[in-house]
Structures are given as C-alpha cells and as structure tokens.
Length: 115
Length: 117
View (cartoon, rainbow over the protein chains, first blue to last red):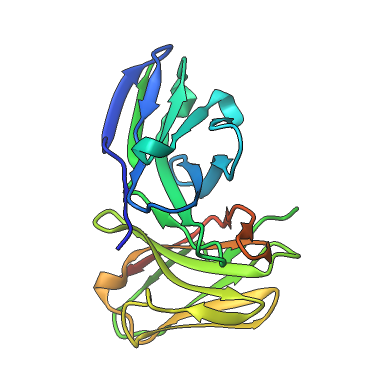
C-alpha cells in the first residue's frame, strides 16, 4: 500500500525561528501534493498544493513547499514562525492514477510555537 | 461561499444508540468525502462519493457504518449500533472533479466530535 510519512510528530520552536517539516511518499508515479493545517479545534485548511510545474510552491501565511521528485519528498517551510502558527500540519498525496481526488494523509506534525 | 457544513458539532450518546452525522457540501462540488480522525489512527478516509454515487467504501470499518448521499447537497453517515471505540472527530470534505485527474483541493467542514459512552 502507498504511504505518506511525516518524520516529526512534535516540533517545538520559538517565534521567529525557521520551520521545516518533512514529508515523503512511497508512490512512484505522478502525484498531486498538498499541505493542510489544522488549528486547535478547527477543521483542516489548505496551505498549498502542487500539481505540476515549478517545484517550489508558495502558499498562504508565508508557507512554501518544495517538491523533489527524486527524493519523493514535499517538505514544508516557513522562514520565520509566529505564535499563531501553532497547529497540526498534514501532508497529503493524491496518486496520479486516481481520478477521484482521493487523498492519503500523513500522520500529522504537531507544531508548538512558544512566544 | 458558505463552506462545508456539518451537523451536529458535538454528539454525546450511549453505546448501542444510532448516530447520524450530516454534511452539506459546497454548492457546485461533485465529490464528497467522509473521514474519521483519532489520535491513534490519524485521518482515515471512510467513503467517498462522486455525483452522489458511492465510489469506494473500503474504508468503512464495519457494517455498523453506512453512508448515503440522496442528492448533491446532502450526505449522512450513520452508525448503528454505536460503540465507544467509534468516538472520534468525523470530517466531511468536498471538492470538484472536472475530469480525469483534474481534481480541485478538498475543502473540509468543521467536523462532528462524537463521544460514545
């Protein structure tokens, strides 16, 4: 079965620090890639997506992600985090052969930003 | 854009009772997904529909779970009888599929927090 791995389950960092969250997937074909964020008690919101083209994707709230096909990775980055970035972050993959938009989610990374 | 609307937001009931969760997708979206989120298992896809037709229900854990989509603007997820291990947050999401592989991102509702005592 295909899988999505998020290496860090919990990350704690201070405001203004840089953030990088890892995401790897096991599917070898064409993929569509997503990062979602879930603020405490809220629903998942789309941060950014990659379908094709420039592998460096910019999303909302200053986040960006880089698709590296050779490494099967889609890591999320933010140069300088804020306390309001405290949330859980999910990487998700849609296999290119799946025409229905089905997503496989990673286990999530809980990020805590301290003032 | 009203977003995906789920009800109820919270449900607490005793085991053995029937539970019905409701979802109204974003108008114009033709795909609807039901997920379950728990600490132990993360986000699990239970079932999804396209144009009101169930496409894949392989994620439904047991026969106690059933889902319907009688029209484009309404779906239900039913658990009967409910058990304590069904306690979780249940999310509904919708998206627009315009052709092979042309799927827009999924938009999620606020979820239903279900507690079975």
